[in-house]
Image (cartoon, rainbow, N blue to C red; front, top):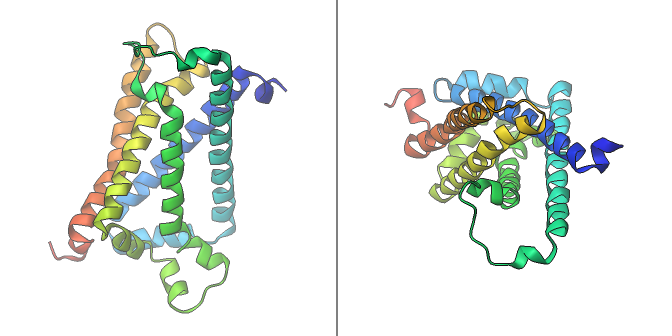
Length: 230
């Protein structure tokens, strides 16, 4: 099947899965902003997205998207390395028009995946997973208290710094991946190519600022401002 066996087909899979992941991040970022205004509202959303069948199905689907995206990125990277052969070891200057993110997409992808594993440990493990295994007592009580886990996570300055670095890596990855995906799908032309780059940079910057603002806010005041202390 050309979609999985050809280079173009693999790029199409990467593009489609990448766009789907950007849409998920958009939802996740908007959801996180709710925590800046109301603990109860944020926890209501967390409860809706608990261990319900639709939330579990969406989580499985999201996991499949991440795996597909990373696997095909790995395959394409190996394919490109084989195509370049010994020339990849030659010392050459970086072409002026080639973006840094474009030359380091795989490395950025690895950082993104490592950050994702940390994120799953800090939040998914303490929330949905605890509900799935039928945890009782304090663990069960905190499973739907997403606000608590945001407070606890970003109360640690070192962990906050790690998350900000992770967000920066995602920004670099997405600013290139946004227009690259549209280019692969043929949604570009002589006029729209540069337009998609600008739109992508603005969109991804605003998207990642949602996450950074929440992290910095909770690191600075631990959510106290949401409860009337500020």
